[in-house]
Amino acid sequence: MIDLKLLREDPDRYVHGAASKGIAVDIPRILELDSERRRLMTEQESLRADQKKLAKETGPQIGKLSGQLKKAEGTERSRLESEIEELKNRPAALKGQISALDDQIASVAPELDALLLQVPMPPDADVPKGTSSDDNVEIRTWAPDWFDPSRSFAANRGFAPKSHIDLIQDLGLVDFERGVKLAGSRSYVLTGDGMRLHLALLRYATDLISLEHGFRLHSVPVIVREECMVGTGFFPEGREQTYLIEESKRGAGHDLYLTGTGEVGLMGLHADEILDESMLPLQYATVSTCFRREAGAAGRDTAGLYRVHQFDKVEQVVICKADEAESRAWHQRMIGIVEELLQSLELPHRLLQCCTGDLGPKNADMIDLECWMPSRGDLDDSGQPSGAYGETHSASRLYDFQCRRLNLRYRGESTEGKTAFCHSLNNTVLASPRFMIPLLEMHQCEDGSVAIPEVLRPYMGGQSVIRGSD
Image 1 (cartoon, rainbow, N blue to C red):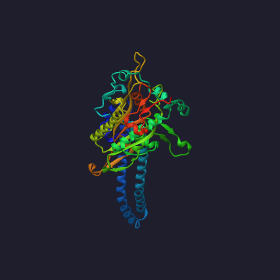
Image 2: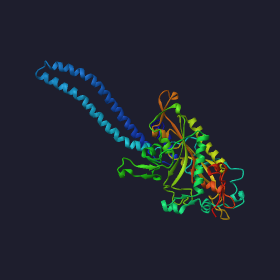
Image 3: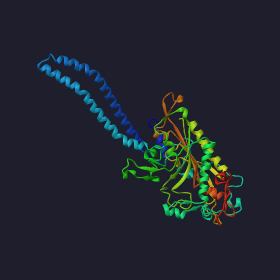
Image 4: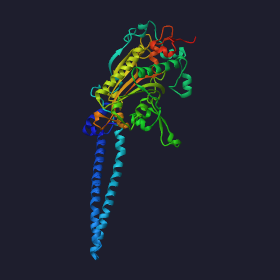
């Protein structure tokens, strides 16, 4: 959620920010409702002040008049009784006006709150303008010495590559048919060395992030309340991508949702808390099962492991002080960890600066990392795919957007005893089975086997090659 005070001071920044992300939100209506609510609250505070003043003044006045009433007779007595009654009724009248204003303020809140949840985080000024992922800007590339992405896989390795779909079928790594039988389209069953490789990747990424880079591991629920989805910025924009568990229809007090990333649980751990500044930064990581409906993705990567409904992901989150320079430094460090991982696995990859139209509502900035996948891209003259990069990682800088929604604050020396909203960042360390696509395709051998990168072999019981069962 954005800072309403900043929106009042510079509404054009938020108007242009929303437009640059292609998100429609009525900023003028927000300002109108906000102004009305503040007017009502000011009026109410004025009445409360009158109420306090009246309470101090009427007591002595009533006492004085009551003393006079004891001696009064006739019309004078009636006048005094009437005046005393009027004084006694004034606080009740003010109380009624204050209560009526409560109702008016409450009537403004739902529309205002709903609109505020739609206002996206404005992109940073150095984020390139664009309307879609086609306008993202390549930052840098990396490839091992033995592979040049500007040349075909065959030119690099001396043989035509198989797609990951062919490899997993030939090597018996995935059973798509039974996965679909169990759960429908975009489902799969990892089998044998396929499951072992999946677990090896997750364990390697988990050890790297925790043992080498100091991120504290947590298990977090993957079934959460709606407040967690709203608080982390996945609602209201992303409801169509989320699986809903309608517990309310079964007598429970609230519905639940399956999360699409471990970020939701990690960020929700400290919702509604005030942290001591000495605790920051928090470096958290988790490995969790993730669920995405892939609504609107019909016809896109329907075959294979690229776009599935259920997967496992190692996710990292940083919660730090409200300092832009610190947030930017952490963003680069988190990206560097993923680059380290990809280089250790000898996978060609590139970094993409996402443009404004590809950021999403909650991001001030986002960097995607894409791995080279030989089976992607256009077909060449021989009918072979030319190869192309495919997204495997995404690193986001959110500043205080999530922490405002989660009411996650800190207090310390730099805040002079006051509270401030934390900043947050998140990053994919590794998501599998999608990550198995570049790994299998890039490390395939001419005889149809797949060489296991050296850093993964300890997690595969020393196994160095995946071969077919013959």
